[in-house]
Length: 216
Image (cartoon, rainbow, N blue to C red; front, side):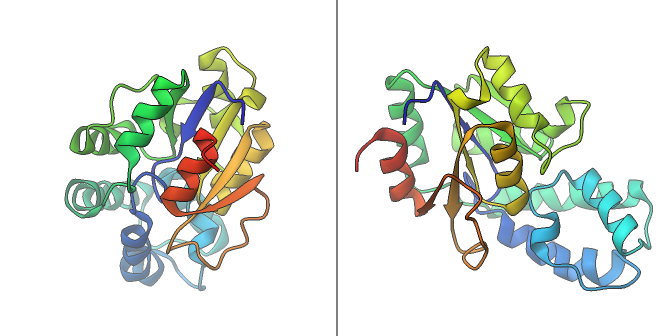
């Protein structure tokens, strides 16, 4: 594919964090922080955690304040990113080869910058041409398209000149609605989800590498 920029989602693509966040949701968010109901993980996966609170409060009611909710996410993030997550197989080599091919590289994530920084430093992902968090833009996050439109604008290109790799329903929706060529990355946590909104679906790191570097 002829794209000027490759935009990677972080959670569920670059690192296998979704399993740890899903456990946190089961153990605390869905068990104690909402008033009633039985949300599905995919309702909130890919969303900024502050907007997760707003969504859950509107749909299910909440038993904690937004400040308490945010603090709990920040506390859980320390072990998720600092200790537990594993980097996608071959990510370092993939980044190097994309740079060598003249592509601009970005992480575009609903996570705040300090969470992204932990992953960047722990796994030595720099240099990156852009690191964009949903916290950096004053517009609604995924599944709205603004974050990917903003990333393209930062690069001075149209979204159609970007390829986005996403794993969640909300993230794929945001990328597709922006106009970017969207690759759905299928792993363990989203194995049963309908990812057909994406332009293409890849199963794992080897297929992603082949798709991005034309090694098919």
